Image (cartoon, rainbow, N blue to C red; front, top):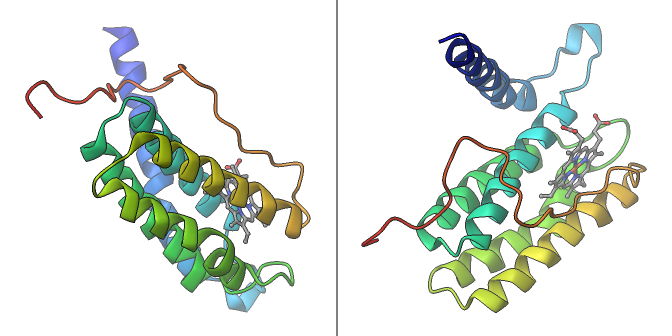
Length: 161
Ligand code: HEC
């Protein structure tokens, strides 16, 4: 019972963080000169990219398309909502460095050749890291940890589709 309450609490807390992200990524508190919370938007991008990778690893096209869509929406909200951050042109870089890979994955997942999907995902993640280097955050390194699913969720395709 206690564990259950605790897990629900965790789920609630993560939901609260996620539901905040779209707000912070599009609003800035201009009166106080604060910049939008890019790190929170990035954590949302990491979250959906991670679940996308787990769905692809499980060869679950339906779920992978869902998480790619969420990844794309998050990337678009950064591209359109955070043009600049600490003097760096974040929006334009997301548009030029990341979006082409997201679009390529979208084409491939329509009718997946999984080896090609694996390569496109790896290239997409390379672009995350390339942009971190380009924006003086090269110490943030995104990498896959194969076979490790940390979520209370199955990524396996459903029996019978
Ligand atoms: C515009 C280039 C750019 C692209 C493209 C980009 N990032 Fe980032 N990312 C940044 C910057 C800049 C920061 C530091 C934000 C800050 O200083 O608050 C960051 C921070 C992060 C963080 C740290 C926040 C946290 O929750 O720990 C993570 C994780 C992250 N990015 C993941 C990703 C992933 C995953 C992708 C690709 C799907 C990606 N990023 C693509 C520029 C980028």
